[in-house]
Amino acid sequence: MMKTSFLAALAIGLATSTSAFAQIEIQWWHAMTGANNEIINKLAEDFNASQKDYKVVPTYKGTYADNMNAGIAAFRAGNAPHILQVFEVGTATMMGAKGAIKPVHELMKEAGEKFDPQAYLPTITGYYSTAKGEMLSFPFNSSSMVMWVNKDELKKAGVNEIPKTWPEVFDAAKKLKAAGHSTCGFSSAWITWAMIEQFSAWHNVPMGTKANGLDGFDTELKFNSPLHVKHLQNLIDLQKDKTFDYSGRDSKSEGRFTSGECAIFLNSSGFYGNVKSNAKFDYTSVPMPYYPDAQGAPQNSIIGGASLWVMGGKKPEEYKGVAKFFTFLSDTDRQAKLHQESGYLPITKAAYDKTKAAGYYEKNPIVQTPLIELTNKAPTENSRGLRFGNMVQLRDMWSEEIEAALAGQKSAKDALDAAVARGNQALRQFERTVSR
Image 1 (cartoon, helix red, strand yellow):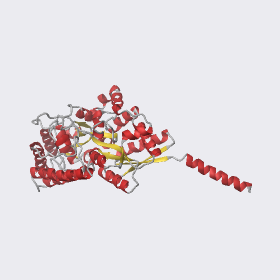
Image 2: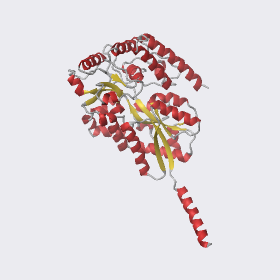
Image 3: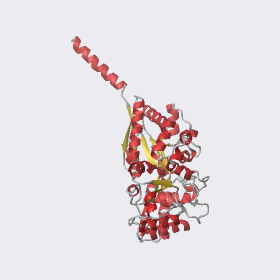
Image 4: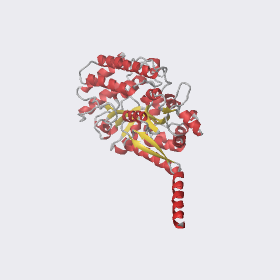
């Protein structure tokens, strides 16, 4: 009898002890693949090993658009993750999702974590903050569009200097074609990010009114200007013999560069980890090309990549774990290492200063390319960034019109006029949604 009572008491005690020390799981949904996926997993492992109260569980959910849509759907179903990685153009949509998010500035304050918005690079935080400077999401993998170059293939084709302007890119691509690159002279991932969004900022022409939506959702799109039409017409003409060869709406095509097929390829600076792991040739990245006759070009680039949004409806103890994880991510040494390994920007001033003081940029100029672009000139109303609602759908619409033009079904002007008109209609719909 006594033995039975003792065993029962022991079982209850063990159960209570186990419950008391059970880790709180923090679900983190992301869109990173390849080398960047490995970095995500390592960050989670290191945080989990650094303390015993919380366990961050990263889960890959597909492309940026897939991941954001999955997170929003999960919130509506009542089972959203704690942390959702959302690409920069999803910012307006997340801001408009009332109740679905927990602003980061509130999270950190309530959790009692040390948090100084001024410690982060302003070119990044401005994108993810309110007009009052309150950070809504946590900067994570910020990047910019750069031009990746296969130096070995350019040399073989007789291109002695890396192109700086669009006419020079076109000329180099023709030489690459003649030297054996029959399927691709040059190309890009993220067609609208490269050829509309970054193109506009780099040339200091507006994508839309109201500082591209940063100063209000009631913006009108404007990227059917003569310069935009001229550029798309050039791509149409070069697509005919694959001097330019379209590579799709997202980054699934980036293997065309690492395989050696496309020797000139516009893509994110965050592509660095995959290039470093897979390219078997001499490579570099340089600033995006520009039209020399465009007044003021080049201007400055805008950030890409993604930030971490905290989803609403979670328990206080879970939010405390998320806040501790964000503090962990902000560590200067960790940020400097993440920047140097991935090609993404350092999110804190201290991490940038540490990397620069160590002479890292002199030995590894690739990592500095996006920083050079972002700080090339003081931002204007056309180059501060962009904040359009329904951006995932907008990009699909714009891509459809570009694809029709490249296929010879529309003129450059008709395609961009249609892209602007369809986009403005979607923006008015978004306005009605957020104003309810």
